Image (cartoon, rainbow, N blue to C red):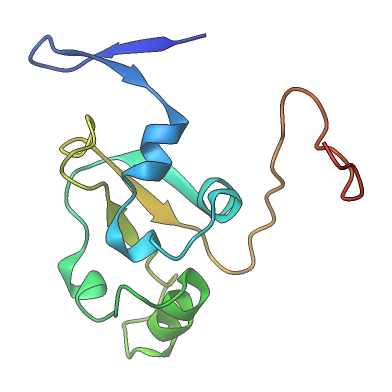
Length: 123
């Protein structure tokens, strides 16, 4: 099944989680596919908070990023979530971005289709 999307200029593109993962932002490059879909969510918006993103080395893991953000001096309130834009080649790079979930969130992946084969299955 393929889902099609039309942008504000009338350009048609496919919606694909494979494209989302393949063209994820640099700050998520260390995330595996499970972490990407369980530990982030997509929102409307096209610009990350530069004060947050510029403070981090993009080679660190997402949990390290969250830990670094929590250590910074900030006004009281909820800690900001890390916003990660898609790479420019993504069809929605100008309108969507991913938010890194807090470390204490509890999401489980829902795998659709056949079960994964057992580890000892030679095929």
